[in-house]
Length: 426
Ligand SMILES: [Zn+2]
Image 1 (spheres, helix red, strand yellow):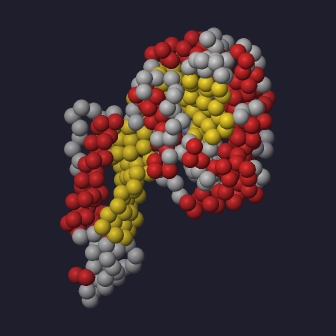
Image 2: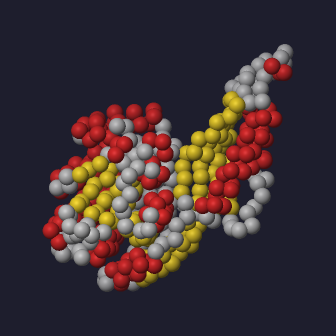
């Protein structure tokens, strides 16, 4: 196998994607650019749109943002050929089929940014070197520009070594990881149906350069849900009895959901993050919206929290004679990494001179929607892993000053290609 990785090419890609951050479900420029690169490398199968996205499971997608972002992508030089193919859904999956029998491996790289304005500080490397965000209010402040780059580096290696590989490799460039919105729609498509191994990772996060967290533990299952109440407006002085008070329904819901009993078999969380209601001081409020999330130590406990919330929403709607609707805006599940893949990652990492700790463990206590994809592969008898690619950082993730050690992009490509060399060369 040719193990040469073009480090300066990785840097160039990363800095290019860093300049054009796009938020979840709006990564049109990003997807077009990724597809251009994949096509120029020689990938013949690049799937998009409903080939990889099941619209029934799309979470937290806003059509106005989608449309604006398509316009902007065109202005910034996105290839219209891909925009047509995408059918307003972002992300793409490149498939390499060796034509030889062997395992099917899916690698997942998330591609969205966060709603953060990049710092203007002179101490910030993207400002010093002129590659800071050109999209005001948006920034690759979670390192997903690095994830895209690692994915492209792996793609290039696949093409360099295509005659030596067996089986199939699927490179999933997933939209909308932030808010855990994108994975469910891919999981509900046919992309993973034949997959034996699923591998994904995050750069930096809780580990510095030289460390690989080969076994990330304690992923929390979570459901993000919006609840909307519709009542009836009325004159607050002359005819309040003709109104139906949506604000009051929402306020009761908030206090009730915090009263959901804890679960005896594991940890739970609930947070009401947003409550908006009402139209005017002297009008019985006719609309209200709640944005909340529940979490649980596992899928069943999270489901318990979600079911309890829905039960209370129904009860309150009945009490106040208002209508309600709920919409799932994001979701992730828990996942346990498979020992076989942990061992493979550790073995590869321990052979890299820049890695001093190839086998760290860490309790994540947060959520990541790669778990939905990984769990699906496990449920059909395959193996999955989600690891952390350690990288020094200048600030924490989602902060304006965030930047990471770009040398670790090479480490990322080395680990993924090491795994492919192991799994797809027999
Ligand atoms: Zn992230």
